[in-house]
Amino acid sequence: MKKGLKIVALSLVAALSVTACSGNTNNGASNGNTSQKESGSGQTAVSTDTFAKYEEPVVVSIGRSIDPSYTYEGNDTAENNLYTRWLLDAYNIEIKHEWEAASSDYGQKVSLAIGSNDLPDAMIVDESQLRQMVKADQLADLTEVYEQYGSERLKQIYDSNEGLLEGVTFDGKLYALPETTLPSAPLTWIRKDWLDELSLNEPKTIADLEEVAKAFIDNKMGGDNTIGVVGTQQGGSLYSTFLSSSDHFLNFSSVFFAKDAYPGIWVKDDEGKAVYGSTTEETKEALAVLRDWYASGVLDKEVGIRKSTQEVIASGQTGIFFGPWWSAYNIMDSIKNDDKANWRPYAIPVNEEGKFNSNQATGSSFIVVKKSYKNPEAVIKLLNIHVNEKEESYKTAVGKELTSQEIPLFLIMGHGDQLDYAVNTTQKVLRDEITLEEVDKLNYGFTYEIASHVKNVKLEPFDNFDIQYWDQESDPDYFSHLYAHLNGGSTFVNADINWVKSLVTSQTKTMQTRWSNLKKLEDETFLKIIMGSAPIEEFDAFVEKWYQQGGDQISQEVNDLQ
Image 1: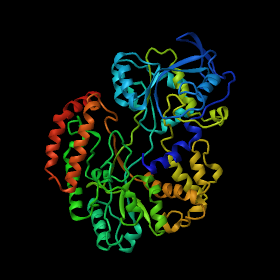
Image 2: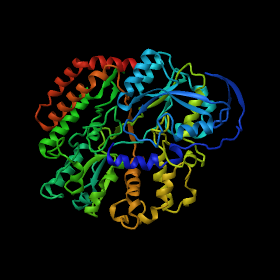
Image 3: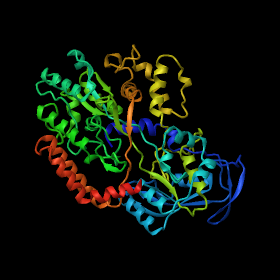
Image 4: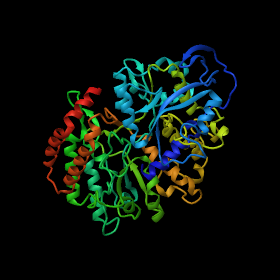
């Protein structure tokens, strides 16, 4: 995860302290009705109250991913720690580990459990494993139990993430509880102060962007060695993929999307069949654009081998890069070195039809429940507790905030509109359209935090986010947060985006043995084409090799999943 994404993850996910990992500490009797439900150890009274404590302990046996480097307090373990002991005390839910596996081995362990049909009560799986289990009829239908036992808070979160539950519903049955995702699309970040100095219009298309880059170079806006467009650095990716769908920072996804190309993800061809986007003619056309940019000097001559693109941005040597809305966090050094560095994001380049395309960030983790498990509502309750909206939290009981290594079946959970709410609500507070007290602090805690500081940082005019209309000194701890949300965030939430979602978001069986070599072939070939060390015709040879070396079988497996 990039530095900027770490920061924003703290802002939008960890800052949802009530959302992410809190629970009801009330050990009192249930307010709801109770019914008798058979458990693995006999009859257990189950209340329709979504937070009711079981009358007798209910065991949830799980398969668990373990970070071997994580240090627990005292003699605590992943199975027996402050959080799991609190669950037992407060809810009579007892966590047992049927098996554990190091993070690097977890996927293989899950696959073995599926293949042998020797499943724990619940575990976290990826998409291909989920689909495999659905086909094998191994999973509990959670439709009714979710409706009956899912808390209002949990349902609000899923309802606000449009299409999320539909993606894990097969033949009308809900078979999993998915994680939520942070929204992301690659914007084009440009030094607007350079545009203004040269009296240039804001670019819209790839051709416009090329003209702007050439103007920056010709006029030496970043000095004698001005770089037009920077991107992928050493060890970086050329574009986001179905395995890292939100990783748009400092790569060339934007250029591919503007040519209606979706390398790295799985899309439908004209016949409705799944095809790997890196093998399409549209991807070849986008590579030709990047190749031309490189040959003409528009593109950084050290693309793919530069040690730090971040340093080029910070030094003021370039005026164009691609990245998501949170990239504003990564230009703080540039602004510090030049307080006139007016980096502004644009929802460009658009395609020939004027559409702004992007792949859609997708979650890749799902909680599933074994079909024969007698208390599936206990798993729903665990997630209710995880996202509990009540002010009393487990932190009150255990005395500290814990991590995913203590919390069983941990998923990242947040409202789908959290960024939209943060941007628009903070602007309303700034314009005195609402008071700070009217901000939904309970559900959007970080919005309340930044809104409480916005008047210290943003100067009039309030709807102009150019750098000269910000006070960078009065409240420096919140300048970066507010600049990212109101500058980058407002552009993103107001953009009309044509989303394209990958047909799969995890590896199939053959990918597990072939994907590493296929991806290496892809990366090396594409970089050689861009840098001119291989002709554009090498793309056709790559496609042929890709299918021969496992792509044919992988494509069949992806189509079988549909």
